[in-house]
Length: 256
Image: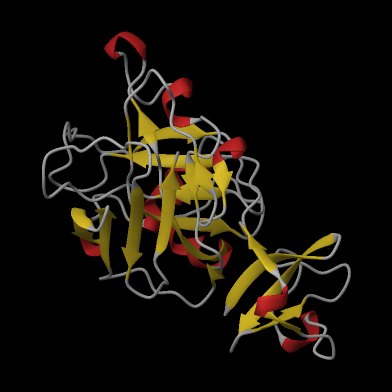
């Protein structure tokens, strides 16, 4: 099932996207408080997708990122635990939004699978994680160098406005194993990998993160970018950056 958030006239709502039509949730329902069965939706009140504006379906309390989660990524660490960082919610934008590049810092794009949490969890076991996931989407974890060559996982590097474009929908039936992930800058292949190559898989990541922070409905976990297949190319004005993950529609971001 594809869950979207849409604008129509003067309101925003969640809905189910199917065959070019959006079926809204019944008033008072959303993807986090119902079982997503037919009884959750106002089946007598459908809209043509062309009549609506899709906005990012994700509105998290926090975005949790995993660094160095694929072999071949520069600086891989020999660690028994995932390397975690945070992004702020102001970075979230829809796939069709445009991103203004910082004037004084060099930025680059990434390509990642995003996981959306369905319910409040803390100290969960890996074996129980599946039932706590609403679904998955595509994410571009845009990043820039910090000043004076400092660690690029600091706030200024990860949290500028628009630095987290997401897909237009949450796919609730997605199986993330053995999926190719690619990124293209101006249609040139830049990154490529397979989700089977993740050093820490989704269950382990969520188990670890929930051991030291509470996760809430709508929180987004981005699972790391595959390695580059060419030297780093920085983003420039008028560039496009496209991400492809098997099972999803591509997303493409334009830079200003």
